[in-house]
Length: 279
Image (cartoon, rainbow, N blue to C red; front, top):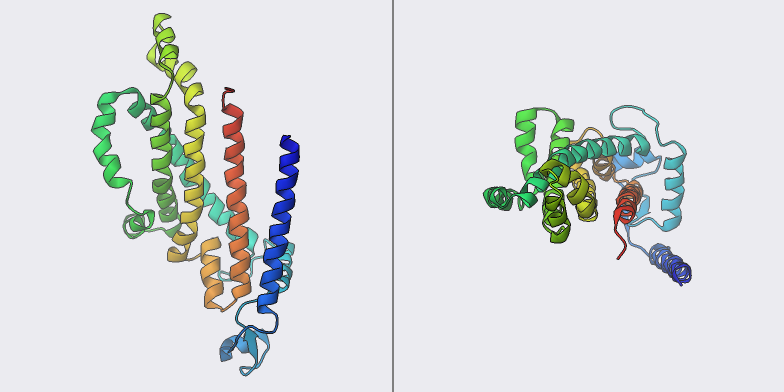
């Protein structure tokens, strides 16, 4: 039954994709408005300034350009001309460093909040004030104090990844079945051992759900952060290609951002399924 449903879902997905691409192709084929090229851009592209260009490229153009990018993903021709593989690697590196720093802080603090009503009440005002602040609002302060754009982006990823993991960890710890804890107390299991042998396995699915939410937010935020700080990264690539009026490259970057985000999400989704207890 499950395999049949998966097959039908895959067929529907393929049909929806074909319908979308077909509609896109028909919408831009010879009927889209044209706009004059900027003279400098036209010179760069080997065209004349009077030649028009489609306001929106079609799927065939985007696909051809995507294959070109994927054929040479790691070329490096200078600061403003690097392959998408290099740009994605910079972004992934920043995300993973900031994310795992957040894991190292959020999970222990979440355990503390979940196991101690006193600390839960004491830390709640700070969490409620800091949690709604947009991660990008920290960027000017990070740039001023750290004075390094790459480290500032990592700090922003750390901040945005912190709260979902911390809150989900605390929620998972509080939700552990009381009878399991009572058995551990009856057997005189210490607090530290109880946390690792009883609470952590029981709360693991909820903790991993928070980690899954955090990685999605982190991948969203890094693109915006790199647009602000520039230099390297897929966010900077998008902004730089927009400045070069290369809408095809912008679309390709958007597609790659989506694919990488999906892979990150599915890795943690698979991990969450592995630690979920059967009903």
